[in-house]
Image 1 (cartoon, helix red, strand yellow):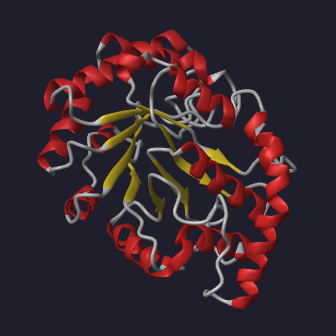
Image 2: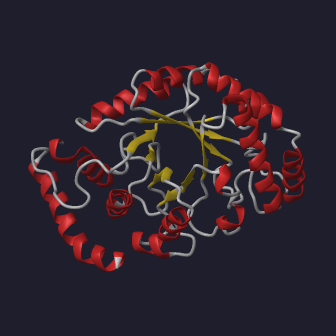
Image 3: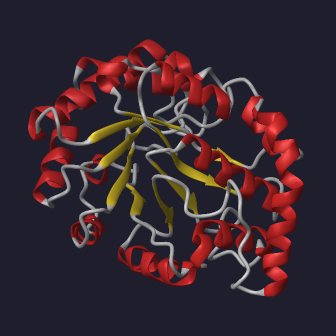
Amino acid sequence: MFRFLRARRAPLTALLVALALLAGPACVPLGRGAGAPPGAFGAYVGYDGPGVRRVAGLDAWLGPATPRVGHTYLPGDRWSNIEGAPGYLEHWARWRQQRPDRMFVLNVPMLERTEDHVSDAVVRAELRRGARGDYDGHFRALARRLVGLGVPDAVLVVGWEMNGVTYTHRCGPDPLAWKRYWVRIVDAMRSVAGPEAFRFEFTPSRGRDAVPWTACYPGDRYVDVVGMDAYDQPPGMSFEEQVAEPYGLAAHVRFARAHDKPLSYPEWGLYRNGDDPDYVRGMLDWFAEHRPLYQTISDYCPHGVWRCAGNPRSSAVYRILIAGPSG
């Protein structure tokens, strides 16, 4: 049904966007994608103090639409950084506290050397150490730091894209140990901050990748949000195919609903298909229909729409549809 409706609607939406671009900001497309999508939105615009300040620049560029989500990452090179040692967390905590309607999203690696491309044997051994509790202290330290900074309500995207091969915290070498380790992390952090603090987010990448992401799910008791990182790839894949593929966007929605969890999209953006306004329009329509808790586009090249001049058509579509009737 969704694909049929999109086939009927897409030419009209594209025409309205084109007319808006020709006529200037006073002419805004109407319809399903117009207006800010339900739920909070933002963008990853940098991890440090300057990244925090860029949120204001994004806000100014968008006009009436206000980004309410601040999204950043902890480095996974060594344990002290996973514990929250980087000084930029203080900048993000102040940003969060300036307005009660803001949301702070923090990606948390599960293991150090997270991008060192270590072997499956090493990953397997490390996951089993984590499952035994060897690393609980690092996550208790992170919880104490976040509570001390005044952000115990942060959304924590733990071990993201675990179904792939990029990160040391990948699930594939030992899914059972990975799930047990996730439980240890959640229990360790809740032991410091309380059962109602933090929201723990399970976020695979779209599609099957190395393993089905459903095989890595640690259980409803230990997950608060079911996210998905969904970039415009591989080359030649249409948005409709991204929806319908195994373990794709539609499967993500079905899974979250079956487990009574809110959706999110912490990473999305352009990638293998260049400046692709149909993809941007499709994603914003998708958010409007499925109402995620939040969505944050990765706004740097080649993914972005504000800070990447190589994507002018996608940038125009994003700005018009996010800004809404006042844009």
